[in-house]
Amino acid sequence: MNGRGGGRRRVEKSALLVPIKAFTAAKVRLAPVLDADERAQLARHLADGVLRAAGALTVAVVCDDAEVAEWARAHGARVVWTPARGLNAAVSEGVAVLGSSGVELVTVAHADLPLVTDLSDLARPDAVVLAADRHEDGTNVACVPARAGFRFSYGPGSLARHVAEAARLGLPVEVLRRDDLAWDVDVPDDLGYMAGPVGPAPA
Image (cartoon, rainbow, N blue to C red; front, side, top):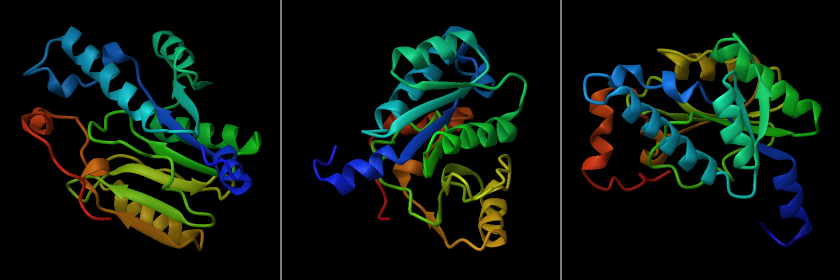
């Protein structure tokens, strides 16, 4: 953490929010190449890496699974319990909970980013920062002002919808295209990151 007062305040007023489904139910599209135990182990491993990338940020995990909640608390993360909400509603609730506790900027990151190293300094005051997936379709990371009323819309085509949502709110938007943020793991082809190092692309 930065020893200067301004650095401390920025960390205290920013947080990382990670939505995580049950490890045992994760990555079902990898079934052709990984069995259930291997998929659960991979999901946990990837989530570990995302939480490590928080640096000095406050971390909250949105979940509705007891094992994930226990894992999150063991990592020092706050748990936002959101049973049967669905991803968009769960993330919105997590952002609202953080906003109500004084957090000003929330970085929402998916839990399956194998190349991520640092999520601590992506958010910008009064702006939206989006990290595109490598297909230029999805949103792997979204940094938003906690009280802006940003409406999340994950799923196919989410990047375009999130850009449009920033415009609706009158907020400037920055789209990041970086390999360390763009690579997520959903289907067998996504395991290609294991074949060798993929260096971060220029910001």
